[in-house]
Amino acid sequence: MQHPGEHPGFYDRAGPFTLAAIAEKIGAELPASVDGSRAIEDVRPLGEATAAHVTFFENRKYLSQLEQVTAGACILAPSFVSRLPEGTSALVLKAPYRGFALVLQLFYPEAMSPMTARYAAGEGGAGNVHPTARIGEGACIEPGAVVGREARIGAGTTIAAGAVIGYRVVIGQNSFIGPCASILHALVGDRVLIHPGVRIGQDGFGFAMSPAGHLKVPQIGRVIIHDDVEIGANSTVDRGALKDTVIGQGTKIDNLVQIGHNVIMGRGCVIVGQTGISGSAELGDFVVMGGQSGLVGHIKVGSGAQIAGGSHPKDDVPAGARMGGTPARPFREWAREIAAIRRLARASVPPGTDQEG
Image (cartoon, rainbow, N blue to C red; front, side):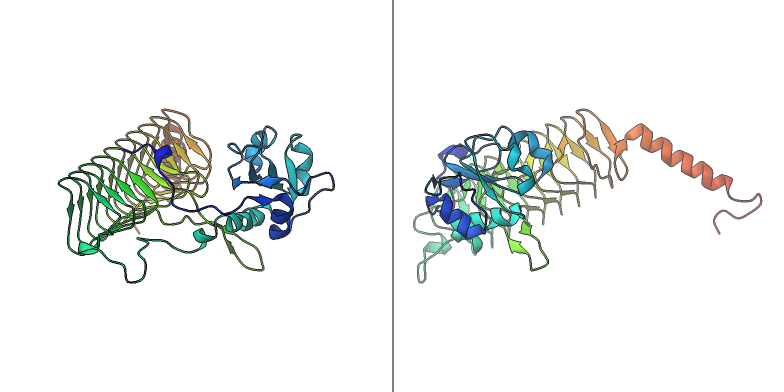
């Protein structure tokens, strides 16, 4: 597949903006010691921001990253200003996540509106393929499929009837995009099988919530799907907020699976139907998740771990662990608990009572 770093991206960035302009936009307090004329070029996650970027901090889980941040500015609550390293300017706000949403709107105003194939009014192409799209040798675009502006379809790939391939999306060689699937803001590898009705690259579920209303947080990341992945019918993969959502090589995903924004999934994972993986969770290689299982956001599941069907870890899962139950615990412990409860239930029934009654 195309290296993600070679892709031009999906959104144009506004700016740069001064710290004073950013503070005014988000309603933040700018300490007197801060140079308000300092220019900021972009928004980055806490662990990736450099002197040209603004970032934000709210989740205490990432306190160690805050103490080592090298960003030009950081949006954060008053109680954490003292933890900010010298050289990073504070944008002080009681609701940092709301400020983060507003600063993203400032730098990426286009991200507030859905974007699909990006056809101009009255613009067309043969069989709904945009004139700027590049179609590889032997690729098949079935009737009713739409291929958007600057999209790239690899040799031997089939885009089935009714599918939508969005603006600047890249699909590798010998892949299959099923009927009525939609692929937006994504780079897809070779020999990838996308079943009917799959939704890839729509914006993740991100809102800065408050009693005054819920402010939409623009999602400017992408979805990266590596080679030999299979995604079952009517599953959904949200694009990242700032970082990318990544599906590793050879991973197999069943029908009706939800994968949230910023999820990182390793190689060879098996995700069974009706599983839900919340935003920013990370899975190592060859993780198995049974049907109707789920992960809360921001946890890590080590390589080779197995999550039983209907189970829901709330904390990090070690590599190779076998987990079951809600909240999930080691499989043997879970099995002993179930056996103990069964014994208690049987012991509580008086002799001669119909246990089925």
